[in-house]
Image 1 (tube, one colour):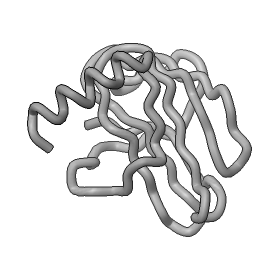
Image 2: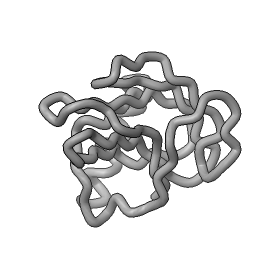
Image 3: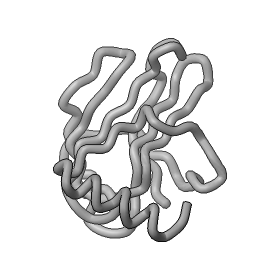
Image 4: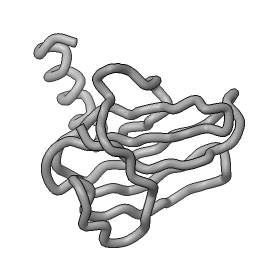
Length: 114
């Protein structure tokens, strides 16, 4: 992805109020980083300072997340082994989400650091 495309994508996210869902991408070479399972409240590890799950039904989830520094993105692992990654985002409050539609049920979810 070129710098210009990244800037345009970041601008579009800023205009939509910081909503990013993790169902858009699959694991790729640029999504390496440590995975962290979702934990509520004050997290205090890595780049995610606060995490509040706002929806979870076993197949889909949403959370309000505060990234205090660096870059992090949403991560979802499904029962068939499929993993999805949301885009890496910088500091701010974000609405993240993911799902396992057509891939079974959620085995784990959280974030990855990039």
